[in-house]
Every structure is written in C-alpha cells, then in structure tokens.
Image 1 (cartoon, helix red, strand yellow):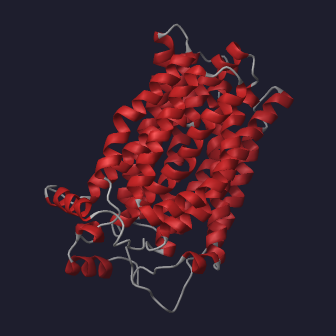
Image 2 (cartoon, one colour; image 1 turned 45 degrees about the vertical axis):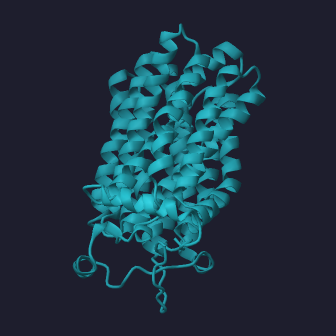
Image 3 (tube, helix red, strand yellow; image 1 turned 120 degrees about the horizontal axis):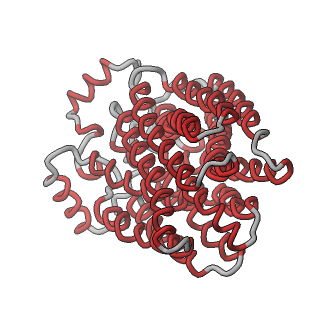
Length: 441
C-alpha cells in the first residue's frame, strides 16, 4: 500500500509507535484481532441474520419474502459501485478511517430499523448496513491483514475467517433471543444489534488500527531481515513478492478470471444463506431449530476457516481456491435431502466448512498474485463482482420460490455456478512479469 508520509499528525505516528513498542508480541496480531472484530460485527447485516427476520417481518408487515431479501440484493448492486470507492479510501487514508467509519455507519443504520414504517425505509437502512458488510469491511479487514503478513498470511487470514464465523453464529441466535425477550418484537432486536456494534467494535477500530508494519518500523510477520530471507528461501515461492499496480493488474486475464469466479462463489454463498432459515421452516423445522442450524453452519465456517488456511500454507493457492468452489457446489445439492433437524444440522455444518474457504482463500489469492502495494485498489475493482454475485444469488432464489413455491430448483443452479467457477480458477494462472517493483507501504 503506498506510503502517505505527510498524512496524519506527527503526534499520531508517535502514539502508534509507542503502542507497538508496548505490545509484548508482534503487533500484527493486534491488527488481526481488531480487524476480526469488524468482521464479527459486520454480521449485524449478514444474510444469516436477516434470515431470522424474514419470517416474522413477512408475517407482521405483509411484505413478501422476495421483497424483504431484495434489500440485500439491491444493496449488492449498490456495493458494486461503492467497492472502488472503498478501495480508494483504504489506499489513500488507511484502514482506521475505513473500518472505524464503517462500524459507525453500520451501527447507526441497523439501530434505526426500529423505526421503519414502510419498505422503502427498510431498503435504505438495511441496504446501508449491507453495503458496509459487502464492501468496506470485506475489503479493509482482509487487506490490512495482508499488509502485516506475508509468509504467515494464510493463518492470519484464517483467524479473520474464524472471527467472521463466530459472528455468523452469534447474530442469528442473538436476534432470536432479543425477539423472544421482547415478545417477538423484531424492531427491538434490530435496535439492540445496532447498539452492540457501536459499543464493542467501534472503539478498537478507532484506536488501534495501523496501516502497515513499515509505517511503525517493523517488518511483515514480525521477522527481521535475516529471518524474512530465510523464510522466503524455505518457502515454495521461487521469487520475491511481485508488486503490481492497479493498471498493470487490470491488463492481466488472471485478475478478471478471479473476479468472475469470486462473483460465482458468492452467488452461491448469499443464495443459500439468506433463504436457509425460511427453507428450513418450510420443511417443518421450528424457528429455534432453524436458527440453531445457522449456528451450526457458522461453527462449520469457523472450522473451515482454519482448515482452508492450513491448506493455503501447504498447497498452491489456485488449487485451494478451486477445491473451495467445488466443495460449495457439491454440498449445495445435499440441501435437497433435508427433511429433519438432524440432517439440517449435518448439511449446514458441512456447507459451512466450504463457506470458511470463501472468507480466507480469495483475499490470499489476490495478495499472492498481485502483491501488497496496490492491493486495496485492486480489491476495490474486483469486489464489485462479489457484490454482484451476492445481489443476484439472493434475489434469484427468492424469485424461484415465489414462482414455484419451492426452493428445490435453486440448489442445482448453485452447483452449475460452482463448476463454472472452478474452470475459471483453474485457468487463472499467476501472472508473470519480468520487472520486479519493491513493496511500498
């Protein structure tokens, strides 16, 4: 990430250096923890969270399920245009401005859902929260971690995936508990979810995030120059990390293939997640058990984050990404077998393992292919494909349900999307360039 030596006060820089010096371990792990908190709390606007609200909101307001989940889809379209802006803000102003600002806006938007009285207000407020989920946090958290780690990037990014997964499991149950405690009042559930974002995630994002290790006199991974050279010599990478500018990356077929593949796998992700609770209710499963199945899936996602992060340190990133897409496509078909709580838990858990790969693998692939120096800007350009996939996945599954009164046609569609994604990933070889550019931060 390009340096901004004149940006920010000298006092701020000294405070950051003292903060780093007083940390008894490599400060990169603080970055992982704080970024992980934003990943955890972005689930206030997750598809699994709104999945718990679909049934009671539809019953209370008379809005159709397609209309309710359409807010996430519209937000996905908007995110396609916001992502480049988020990448620019990250590149120019750093992760603290982007992620702290995101938590501020997210908490306010979700809290304000208490007072909606028409579907337009719902689309605006939940849409804002969903845009924050899809663009700034998605880009900012993974990118700042990639700045602080190179040889340990897989395991550090997997920690982000675990934090997101814990949020996936927590917020649906939190929402259900809040609704139960307020006699089914979904409005108060939204209110307290928004307050929790402000109370827990905002302060550390505002105080502890630092752009890069070099900006405070450190090296990535906390290694000395000699340790970094030794780690590089022992890795399977035969050349130093290559740094691509945004313009250079945009000229490579690999960037666009990875972007399209990202859209396809997140098409599956959102299509399943946002309708899963309603699908289980249609199968005769109770609301509490359906919410518990979402938690099981989140637990699978946490395990998957660790598993795929472990694979990233041992196999080529392209291979791991292709395996992730294939896993999602294969397991999607298992939802057709769900007819009891036990099977619902098993399928949700196994599918969650695949979702863990989506949290870990794509950011690492982009960093490994194109380096750290312009990663924020590059993610800003590729992330609209992810947002587009999320937008289409949720609304497509809703339309299929409204037309056929069944979700059975959606799961084969997800499998086909996964197969196309696998082909794109396999074809997206790491681009080569003769001239190497030193990393700037």
